[in-house]
Structures are given as structure tokens and as C-alpha cells.
Length: 172
Ligand SMILES: [Fe+2]
Image (cartoon, rainbow, N blue to C red; front, side, top):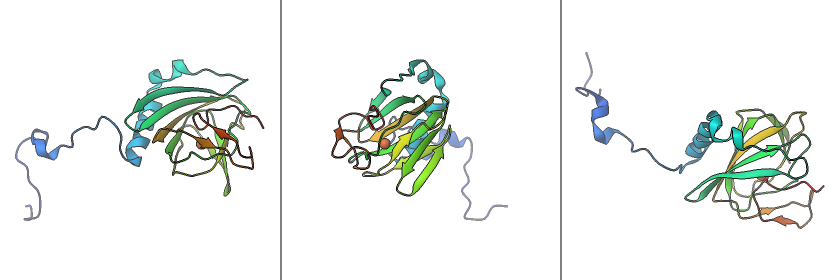
């Protein structure tokens, strides 16, 4: 016996159009960006064959773009890292696809294992490095797309990079 407050639908609820959220082609919320990253992570066919490892320079590949955002695929051989930087006015979602990365911030270091996701706000400063003995692969979504990556004095005094966040060689 249902109370008066219960919603009752006769027949198949999926046939009631107004109850359905229209599928969104592009993510628009933090949760949706994180979900997009997880979906790409789970679909290795989208990225595994694209990954290259380069011991002399950081490797990166722009996997896709959408309105206001960019998705980058990055590889890290052991020892490669970013130097301390922020992401200008971009927010981001970092997702580890393979291997292990270590993120250093003023609050300390933490290990990011495969599947780990890290959301950061504009101005967030960190340094990411592959401290492990195996190569690593990560996925980075920037919203809006990254236009600058200011380096911080602890790593590179006054330097500015014009390319993607983690996507630059380590010089120090
Ligand atoms: Fe970064």
C-alpha cells in the first residue's frame, strides 16, 4: 500500500520523455569532467596505441578538445617531472592511467596510483614527478584550455611555459 507521497508511474518509466535528462555531449561540471576522464581511462583503445615514451623530452598529445576544454595524454619515464608550476586560470582533472606519479605541494607529497584522480582549481600550484621505476601515463583535462603554465621560483624563477601543464621538459 503506497502513501499519497509516493510517485507512481504506470507502464515503463523510460517511455516518459520528460523524466529523462538529455544526454550531454560535452562535460560541464567537475563531476562530468572527472567522469569523462574515467571513461577515457577505461577505454584503452582511445589512448594506449598513442602513448610514446621519450627519455629526452616530455611527451604529450592532445587527445581531444571540446567547447572550453582540452584533454591531454602525457607519458613519464622514470625521473621525469614538471617543476613547480600552476595552471593560470585553468581548472584541471589529473587522472593516472598507468604507473605511479608523485605530486608535491606545499602540504607535502602524495602518491597517485592508476585510477587516482585529482581535481585542482585555478592557481593551484604543484610539482608532479615519476619517482617510480616504471613509466607512467596520465590524462589531463583543462578547463578552460591551458594557455599558460607559470613556473614557480622553487623550480624555475620567473619562467613561463606556453604549453600544456605537465607537458614540458624538466630542466632542473
Ligand atoms: Fe600541473
